[in-house]
Length: 482
Image 1 (cartoon, rainbow, N blue to C red):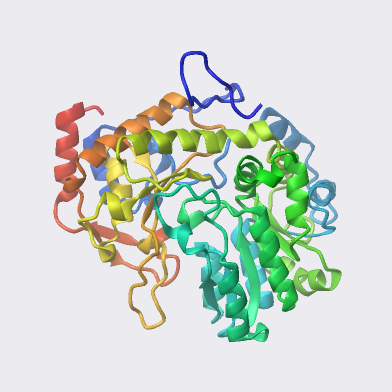
Image 2 (cartoon, helix red, strand yellow):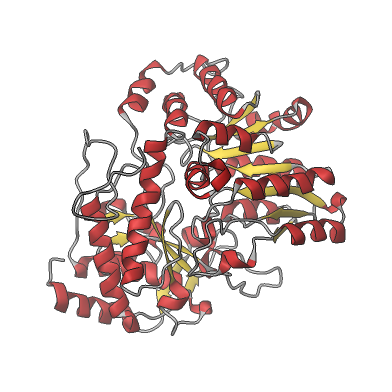
């Protein structure tokens, strides 16, 4: 039962679990939050978690484990080589995906490193519907290039298009013909495209895209990190899939790809990752990179306790009741904010509710990182930590010029089984207040700018005294202790 109907109200998402362990939250006074964001270099990644009221930075590694996942950790086999924990995990993955060969890694970006080292050559192209930050960084550091071919409609903020992550099939085939298959590293499909609002890709589009790649003998790769949300959307939005189980849809998707990799911090609700490889020869061509960079082939840098939890989590990641809650809470938040006139990415996707910062703060040029500024403003106004997904998350062009992002988003992630509906209402309320006072928010500039993945560790400063003026207005509205 994916949705429970109410007698007196409409569209209220229901938690399909009960709370058994809690963690105390702290809401610092506004003046203290102002100090903390300044000390963090106006980068929400550098905030201390103890200074945050609602951490909506990501769903990576912060999803709540179930009782079954936690109890499974007690049976972990700590052997360095040949751990029975690994064989249990491998068996479960083979059961779900139908792929025998498995390379463990400590998380998704480790998988991306291995794939890049195996397939990427200088000036070769990795073709994809849309990039993810770490995937792109591993490709470009080896001299490769990324070509994004998501349909143009996928970059329109306000829409009712159900699958905004679909790849443009005509452009895909034309690009292969133009560049030559020998100059293409692989076709990478990302389920639940992270940087354009967690938007799903349809099964039919994946099928046609991989058929084109196979026609030209190009390796097909699926980033399955956000697959659980994408499975939910395929079942509920794709007419031909509505009578199929989540497990059946998963296998149908898996059968399309040569390689599937995932971050277990998302898919599986624990902390780890891995690469599934269909062809034995291709598997052997990558396996030496695991002990070199990750750990032995039967743990790959993961804690065996996490591996046991993840093995149970894989099954939970394909239970309809479990994977329904995230998209339903996100839809609720997006729809409520949309009613208030807040510019949201619609329809609501997976991972989190995404605010169109370019529209929200249309007085701030992209060169001054409006999504990053909005993330700082959200922390000042409510203690809510979100993640910038815009120009700040991009790499500079090869000539050093700023690469302006296609979309300028603030992501408010919904870690699975973590937040309640009242906490969601609090977030909606504070976003609405900030939208009504958006003219008080200004831009940011770098003080320290790392060359790679600058959004993780960069230090910024505000342009002007807008954080102080914003905090003053917030205190006047809510008082000193809020």
